[in-house]
View 1: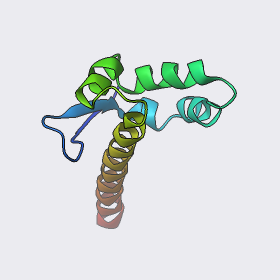
View 2: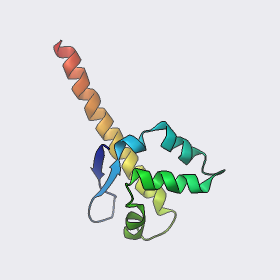
View 3: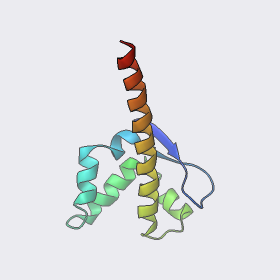
View 4: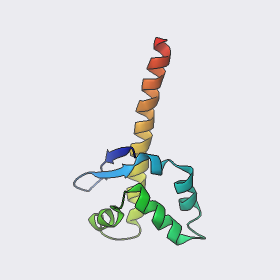
Length: 96
């Protein structure tokens, strides 16, 4: 598990997600197929937030719409992590 920490605009405190789950094919497939299998989406959501999904949803007001806000913030954090990792890789390659 590679933990990423992020904030949600307008909310106090930090949230964490599992970067590996957030970026995995299996997890994203479950999200994409949520129209056919809604329970799979919630299983994926639970994995991404390492079992803290209900706590996080309560912090965000408990509405289903808040799942999109939380996921967007998590994806932004993953994107930032990926960008910084790419920068480090580029520097290592350039140094060789």
